[in-house]
Image (tube, rainbow, N blue to C red; front, side, top):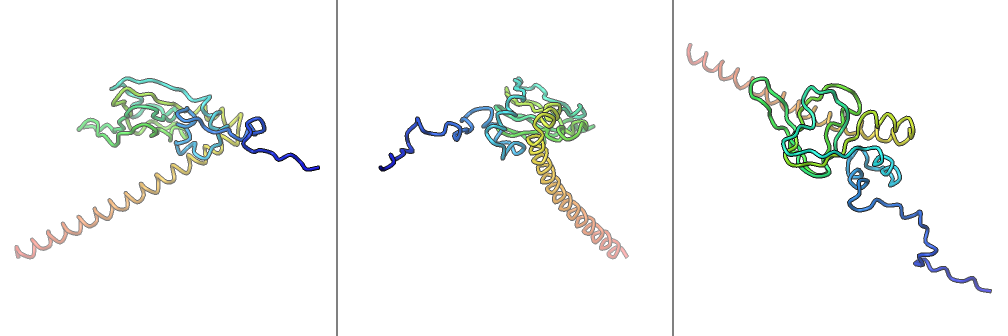
Length: 194
C-alpha cells in the first residue's frame, strides 16, 4: 500500500515554531539592526525587548550631559540627536547628528565613567534605553545571552579604538609634517638673513 503524499504547503502540517521571525516595525526589528544585538535569535531579541525602556523627548531636550554618570546606551527609534562636546571657551562643538536606528552611549554598559559628550534631541525623539543594571540582570538570568551582548560590545569598542588609532596616527603624521615645514622655513629665513 502506497503512503499518502505529504503536501508541504498545507498550513495544518506546517511547523508553527519554525517561523519565529522578527516582525517588520517591531521593537525586536529595531534592536536587530543595532550592532550590539545583531546576530541574536528572534527569541533572544524578544528577551532584550522585554527589558529595554522607551522614552520620549522633546526637541532641544538633553538626553545626558558631558560629565554625567554613564548609565546605559540609547537607540534612536525616531528623531535626530546631536552629539557634542563642551569647550571651555567656545561652547559646544557638534561632533555628529544621529538618526533613526543609530545608537550612542554604549560605553556606559561596560563602565560607569562620566559621559564624554553631550546628547541633545534636535527633533522630538523616541529613544530606546538599555541600561547597565538591565545588562547585569540579563547576564545573571540568561548568561549566554548576556555574554553574547558583551562580546558584541567589545567588538564595537575595539573597532572604534582601531579607527581612533588610525585617526590619531594620521593627525600625528600631519603635525610632524607641519613642524618639519616650519623648521625648513625658519632655517631658510635664517640663511637668507645671514
